[in-house]
Amino acid sequence: MKSKTKTKNEPWKAAQPYILKGLEQSSQVFDQQQPDLNRYSGMQRDTYGRVAPGAEQGIMGAQGVVNRNLSGANLTGNPYLSGMLDRTRESVIGNVNDQFGMAGRFGSGMHGAILGRELAAAENQMRYGDYAQERNYQQDAIGQAQSLMGGSQGMLNNAAELPWIGVGALNGNVRQASNGYGTTTQSSNPGFGQMLMGAAAGGLNAYMGRPRG
Image (tube, rainbow, N blue to C red; front, side):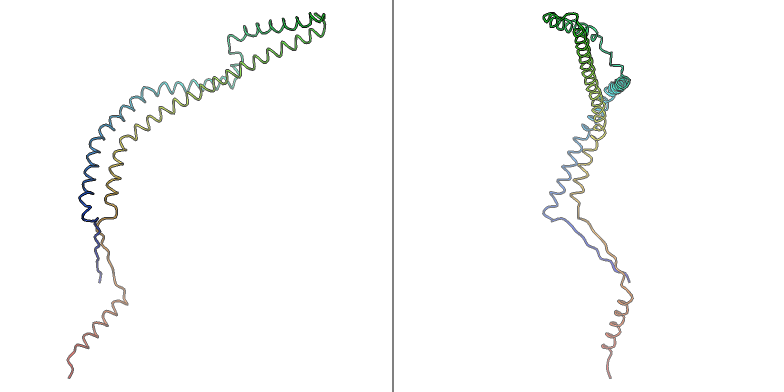
């Protein structure tokens, strides 16, 4: 024979009105703020629609810069480098000529060797510095383009999350207010041994209560 047991768990009676009032206030705040959250979400989606195409173009342009770097196309990419090299050569030639002229060795073999070495060193140094600086500028541009794309994607994610902020807060308050309360029903089915003991006890009681002659 099955038996059922019901257990009812309720909050402290004096606290019940405040719990209900808190739930009503949560519902009021939700009703007031949810339209604004939905509107802000739509505004951010609209902004994303305007920003995303430019961000995508920036990423594509950055990829083009990477490809140019890999191909070495920027080695001669500075249109002003040739003029800067000409002025550097003039300065190096003047300095070396002055040194050898004062020493009375202008036009000597040593003069020619030193002049060639100084010209090559100055030109290599300028070309290397120009190339390294250009690469730094390009790497910065790549990072900026990626940040722009990441920022626009974050805007879209935020727009998707905004409407659920109020929903999550309301559901959380409801769960917290109702946590641990309610009615539970437990069913029990006595085993065979318990049934035998019950039957034996019933028979003994009947025997003890029988009139005796």
